[in-house]
Each structure stands twice: as structure tokens, then as C-alpha cells.
Image 1 (cartoon, rainbow, N blue to C red):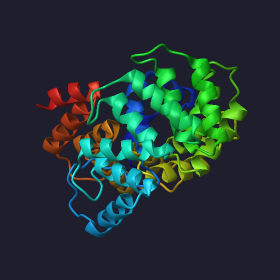
Image 2: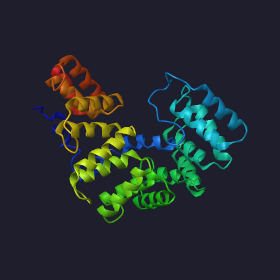
Image 3: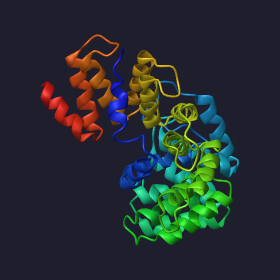
Image 4: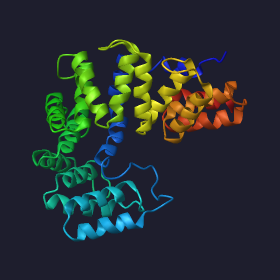
Length: 334
């Protein structure tokens, strides 16, 4: 019988729905970085690679030509390519110029993209006040992603006054405008009870809407709700399906959680080999928890050949990704 190593680690963090929400709330800064992917979700894929291994010059040429012909949606889309390094070498300054052109000509998404660049100081000097003004302009111009991202600024209170009431109203406005992220973040507010009375049933409906709309973070939270039976009937099979959707949507923490389901045989047939593959995918995608659990797999030889050297390297990678316990484990194996 295989020892479900992933499940042992996972129960400490993810299995309880409330713990999932509190973990995300405690790591708003980290989660905030994930949200940039939403800006480009319909125009380009988020990429960790500055210079892609394969470039599609025809796509870039088509967008460039369209932008030059005053198609300002194309200018925005081209800006996302340069911002993320998708199909072209990353160039944040070029992205700023393209977002500015789109925004100046009435493209609300361009204003949101430009706001993000000013908020984070990417390709331009950081200017929180200007970022807020640009997000507001996008929101008022019918760009719900601008409402959602401005909501995250008011909720986090980083470099500005924290205002949960404004955040809640902006998430609602974004959700009403059909933005999946807005629905998901609004659901989290109701799920925890931030700036509003806690309402698990409403939170679950909002998570479902967001998940169906392509916001994988909400698929993860909804999966944890089904796993814990919080606001819905407990259903391990449905939880695993939701984790799979999120993992397929490149939420790498979901791949780690799904690995736990396969390791323990909860909601899916037990398959430690597949669990290990999911952990590798999570680790490759930058999820420190996935690296740490995969390290434990190699340290103990669970469905793999025992390899302390590889385990140490994985612990070190997890440590570099912010998993403090992995730092201690790496030192122990040194």
C-alpha cells in the first residue's frame, strides 16, 4: 500500500475550506501577482518566460499592422504580448506605449493594462495615484476588469488607504459586467465575511460563476468547498473535477492539491505515479508546495527510486519559492 504523502502535507493547508480562504487572505501580496494573468487571459497566455522558445511572427505582424491602422483593441492585445513575453521578446516599455495608445483612444482594456504597469512600476515609474485613476477610467468606460483590479488595490491597502467597502462595490460592479475575476473575488469576500455578512451559499454561487467564466482560482476554492462540505454537500469527486479544471487552467497550486486526491484515492482512483506527474507539473509551474511534496516523494522513494540528491534540489527550489519548511528540509539533507 502506498503511503499518501501528498495528503499528509495537504491536510495541513488545503482540505478545510476555511483554511483555504484564510491562506489566500494572508497571502494577498502573492495572490495579487497571479491576477495580472487575468488582464491578458483573452489576448495572450501568461508566461514565465521572457524570451519564448517559439515565436509566431505572423501573429505579431498582424497585430502590429492592425494597431497601425488604428484598431486600438489590437494595440492592447499587442501590448499584452510585450508585457508577458508571449510570442515576442518581453519589452515592458513597449507594452506601456501600446497600452497608452489604446487607452488614449477609448479602449478600456488599454487603460487597465496601463494602470497595472503604473501600479507595479513595470516599464514605467511606479505611480499608485495614476494607477488608481486609470483603473477608475477603465471601470467607468465599461471595462469590468478595471473595476476588479481597482478592487484588489482597495482591499490590499498597499500604498493607499484600505477600503473593503469600496473593494466590495467594485467587485460587484465587475461581476455585474460579466467579469469572472470580479465574481470570484466577490465570492471570497462573502466566503470570509470581509466588508459584508458571511454567506457561504452566495459565495458558492459566485465561485461557480467565476470558475465557469474561466477564473481558475475560484475553481480551486470551490473544489475545497466541495471537499469540506462548506456551503454545498460534500463531494470528493466533484472536488477533484474542479481541481482538474483549475490545474488545466494553469493554476499550479491546484495541480498540487489534485495530486493529493490521486495519492489518497479521494474522488479519483488512487494513482501515485500520476500524483507524482502532477507534482512535477506544479513544481515546474512555480508552486513551492508542489516542489516540496515532490521532494518528500523522492526522499522516501514513494513510487519512484529513492534519490536524496534530487530531493535536496527540490527542497531548495521550494525554499526559493517561499516554502520555509522546505528550507529546513534542504538543510537537513545537505
